[in-house]
Image (tube, rainbow, N blue to C red; front, side, top):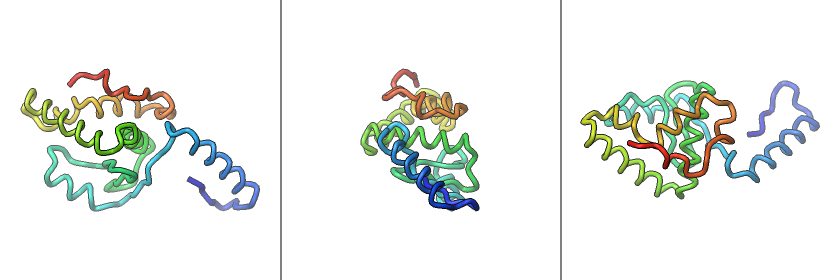
Length: 144
């Protein structure tokens, strides 16, 4: 994202554009569009087995407040998972994994935490270079 701050000038703008172009060439570093202070997570929490703070859906991440760097990384990992499975594939697999976890644990919150997609995101979201560290299809190493 090109950020225009108080020291906006053509040199800084040019440097930011070059940095963004390099990032765009590496799909592994792509990030979604972040939407803060959204009501969508609040509404989703009414039907979800957990209190939803933020969620990633296609090119967007919606958060009910302001996102920490860790939340951004966590949701960017989900975005990458969706990209590698062409979105629909990830949504279907995520749902199937959650259903298997729910059948196994009889607890919606535990099924969420044991979902391989969530396990990968939680394992990596502490690292500032989480997207670079993340292995393609890496979520497959986790067990429900």
